Image (cartoon, rainbow, N blue to C red):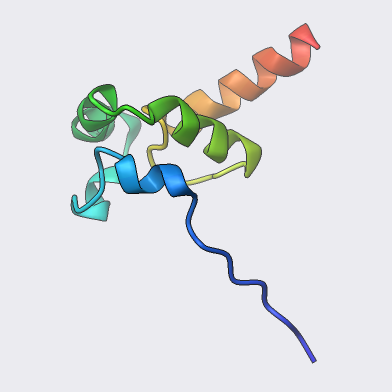
Length: 83
């Protein structure tokens, strides 16, 4: 029997600037289309927590913590090089 672990969203999400915003904004077709999402992230008090959450989980889609998936891959590569 498969068991799925359901966890509550992180507490910081309650304070996120994106709360209540159409999620589609955070899943742009191209990185160039991510500016609206990044503008919301730029005003967010928990942006750094969001980014770290996405990095820890290797989130592959969407804008998290003001970064696109491509930008998060760069951050991960830089961290590996400096480790």
